[in-house]
Length: 273
Image (cartoon, rainbow, N blue to C red):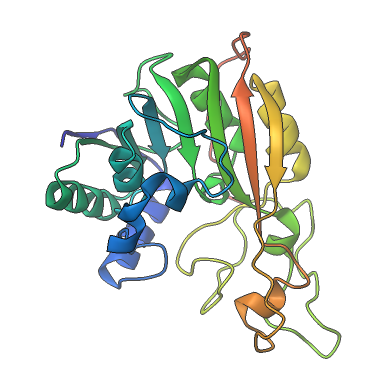
């Protein structure tokens, strides 16, 4: 497996360090794919069937999705896989799983909004699990994805819903309450022990006009939208499943790269709030 590295800056450095620490602590979202997932690897990562019956030979980027799960399963399904992540420790898990299972996976250490190490039009598919919450400007990510995808290429991404980032993790006497403004600027207040956010990271709230409108403006046509079901009628009050009965935590988007390239440079400026 090849490994490449590019320079990063705040808040990227903060989140890189935070995710390195989460791997060492074996935190949530740092567990490699299980043996049973490899029995039908494509079904394990594409339950909606958006990718069709086969991805064999497709050039596929797992964006901001290190950790030894996504890259390994897509590679096992036959794709030519590159994985990008800001965390060297997360990428180490990808290298480990690939070596153990005899898979060919290219690893690139970079931020999702700065993909200069990847050539224009070099991918057929980009898969991005929940991660855009870790960058200040989601449009920068979309522009980068639009650049590296071929015309007609597929972009499947999942995001934290704005209202979930606005809402308290624990219920009050009135239930789960909105505690952050919709037009919050800068990183959200830190959390400890939340099942809806990752403690130690810097997270940013992106509004719907940014998540959906920004994707369209970057050169994508949205084909489908899913709100993954996490509500649990039997869950204890205050748990992830219980809160998800009232606030859907995620949205998954299937988008197609149109023929027109996005206009304007993807300039990234970090202004401390």
